[in-house]
Amino acid sequence: MTRHLLLPVVLAVVHTASAQGLGGLWPVPQPVFTSGETSLLISKDIEVTLNGASLVSSTNHGSSSVSSSSLVSSGVSRALDNIFSSNFVPWMLVPRYKLSSYEPALNGTIVSIDSLAITLTSNNSTFKPTAADADESYNLTVTEAGEAQLSSFSSTGVLRGLETFSQLFYEHSSGRAWYLVNAPIDIQDAPTYPWRGVMLDTARNFFPVADIKRTIDGLSYSKMNKLHVHVTDSQSWPLEVPSLPELSAKGAYTQSQVYSPADIQSIQEYGVARGVDVYFEIDMPGHIGVVGEAYPDLVVAYNMEPYTTYCAEPPCGALRLNNSNVEDFLGELFDDVLPRVAPYTSYWHTGGDELNAQDYLFDPDVNSNDTAVLQPLLQDFIDTQHTRIRNAGLNPLVWEEIVSTWNVTIGSDVVVQSWLGGTAVQDLAASGHKVIDSNYNYYYLDCGRGQWITWSNDLAASDFPFNDWCGPTKSWELVYSHDPAEGVTDAATKSNILGGELALWSETIDSQNLDSLAWPRASAAGEILWSGRLDDSGQNRSQIDAAPRLNLFRQRLVARGLGASPIQMEWCTLQQNASGCAQPA
Ligand SMILES: *[C@@H]1O[C@H](CO)[C@@H](O)[C@H](O)[C@H]1NC(C)=O
Ligand SMILES: *[C@@H]1O[C@H](CO)[C@@H](O)[C@H](O)[C@H]1NC(C)=O
Ligand SMILES: *[C@@H]1O[C@H](CO)[C@@H](O)[C@H](O)[C@H]1NC(C)=O
Ligand SMILES: *[C@@H]1O[C@H](CO)[C@@H](O)[C@H](O)[C@H]1NC(C)=O
Ligand SMILES: *[C@@H]1O[C@H](CO)[C@@H](O)[C@H](O)[C@H]1NC(C)=O
Ligand SMILES: *[C@@H]1O[C@H](CO)[C@@H](O)[C@H](O)[C@H]1NC(C)=O
Ligand SMILES: *[C@@H]1O[C@H](CO)[C@@H](O)[C@H](O)[C@H]1NC(C)=O
Ligand SMILES: *[C@@H]1O[C@H](CO)[C@@H](O)[C@H](O)[C@H]1NC(C)=O
Ligand SMILES: *[C@@H]1O[C@H](CO)[C@@H](O)[C@H](O)[C@H]1NC(C)=O
View 1 (cartoon, helix red, strand yellow):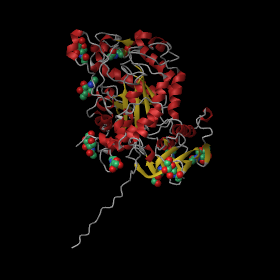
View 2: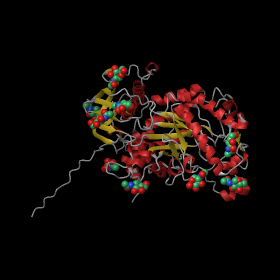
View 3: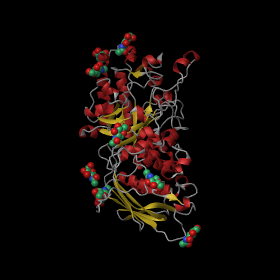
């Protein structure tokens, strides 16, 4: 008797080379990514066309004359630079001393990619996107015959596709060629969440403009699209405001640590060119004590001790509520700053975290710490500032306490940034707010590294071993495990969850350790926010699939000038898909 077995035919999307050392992309394209096993070279004279017209060739790529106003042509120029000038020989991603069996031999006949045809099917600019109206999708194909095609509906989509294109290639160990290993390639790619960002605090410690631009590079390489600059706090005011010059003249730590209007403009333009929306936060009415350096009459509880009674971190200080001089000051501040940032972004963050009612015992107009007295004043305060933000053509953001602690009614245009964890993101989204997730249990990249506080011997024993408040450290695996909309099934609630931002509060971060703390951990969230937490088969994306690709991506970040941390020892990266470094069952 013969049994006829019906073998299941597997028609799933094939990721032939993507899970192996070479051929992996970060974030992984979705919904479609198929690839083969044919190696191709790429010609240094590649001709790039946009809607049929020649755009740029290697004869001028990289030269400053190419930095045209066109977002696409400068994107092409950077992608070619990343392929030909900032690439790497991937010996560390294949088994020890086996690179020659992965890279193509150059003495035979091997096809070269000598054209990239870009199709941009609308003139829609996405350079000042609100969360919903940016179409970042793109399609990319590379045939075995060496024809590359990229299509998109927006310039930002083209930039995302160019990033993917640049990640396909390696430098040959001969130093004379650049190649990919996985043609034919067919990609249809689009983000899961529209808001994928990092928040950088430039007030606790200052970051030079070059650091901020390098952070924008890391975001764009990770297909992330928001840089939220927490530009002032109670400790320092590095933002030059020409109509209120004393703010930075007295409030910056030193005069070399000031962002001029030209600096702000160049940071935003740098972001626009890379598909990264740079927007700013002046936190208020708390977290703003430093205004007292220039305008002592506008703030209360500045430097008040013990700080634990009046704020979360010294120096304390909050804007007076119900005071017309404060309103005049804020009117002047916003009239100066908002029109300068508005050409480049659609957002402005008014802060609102950790407001301490005790401060208002010292406010001569209020004289109370009763929340029933303070709440209506705060409502008026927020209403007034948000009207100013809207009048400048911007959408306001607030920290979640404005809504969830203070019951302030906000407009439906306001994006709420949640950090307190628990079910806050879901609860805010379910009650109709647009929300971005910065849950400190997953997305606070400063956490778990010990305290900036110092203890006397008398007190040391009670706080030994001097942990910070938000440990453990958020490893890339922990970051990667988090999905802002985990478990949310209601479609309306889900669509209110716009995405997330990784936070870099900077009490113990400055130029020297910024890159190593940000990268590649922010990129781990970048993949979840772009590609989704679930893979094609509906399973949580696996660290075992992710690790080799993240090793590869980290190597690209380093090759492109970011001081990204290793996630594993080289013994792991040298194994086929890092298989020996998986936790045994
Ligand atoms: C890892 O590499 C081995 C050897 O090539 C292969 O058999 C296996 O399928 C790979 N695993 C994944 C997850 O790609
Ligand atoms: C190319 O060189 C390799 C060794 O470097 C050799 O094994 C191979 O036969 C050569 N192929 C051709 C087509 O010459
Ligand atoms: C883009 O704009 C130009 C000039 O306004 C117009 O000629 C062209 O047809 C437009 N292209 C598309 C794809 O809309
Ligand atoms: C990508 O290809 C799919 C399938 O053909 C198509 O529906 C989509 O419009 C294409 N997107 C772009 C940006 O060309
Ligand atoms: C271009 O923008 C308009 C207005 O926002 C929108 O209706 C249209 O769908 C966009 N076109 C494409 C191809 O994205
Ligand atoms: C706020 O200021 C107004 C006008 O000065 C005053 O009438 C009112 O009592 C103040 N409110 C509080 C709660 O102090
Ligand atoms: C208000 O201040 C009083 C006196 O300092 C204190 O006992 C009380 O706990 C405070 N209330 C709030 C809401 O902070
Ligand atoms: C906000 O509303 C909650 C629930 O009604 C209440 O417990 C809380 O006291 C309110 N907070 C303020 C500041 O009014
Ligand atoms: C994914 O992991 C989370 C925990 O991080 C878990 O709650 C969830 O059930 C998992 N989803 C699937 C589809 O396995």
